Image 1 (cartoon, helix red, strand yellow):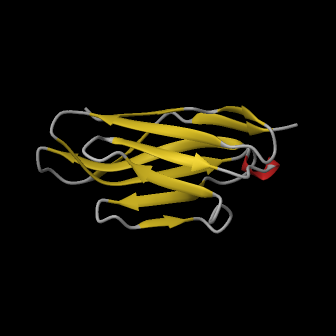
Image 2 (spheres, rainbow, N blue to C red):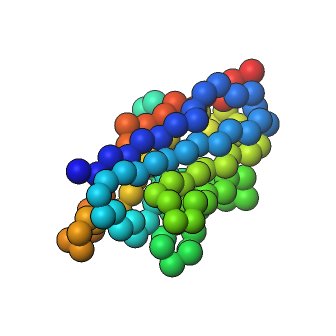
Length: 120
């Protein structure tokens, strides 16, 4: 059983910063990628950032240059550093992990999401 949990959401003023965390747990866990998505009310879920085990990270156009995704070496934990936040960044942020247990096929596992609200 793989579990994914996000944390760190909250209320922040425009121009401020926030760091989200994503923790994946499960026995014999092998993570291929860790991705951040967000979904604002009335909008489709969009990719924010994705980091692979090969060290490649890609960002959505709307956050490139403001957000930075990272992984904690040797641990199944990732972070999303968000700077220069704008009202348009308000959304529920989700972590998705592509992982496998015991050498089986990789599958996607989603967290429950954490609310980020940018407001003055």
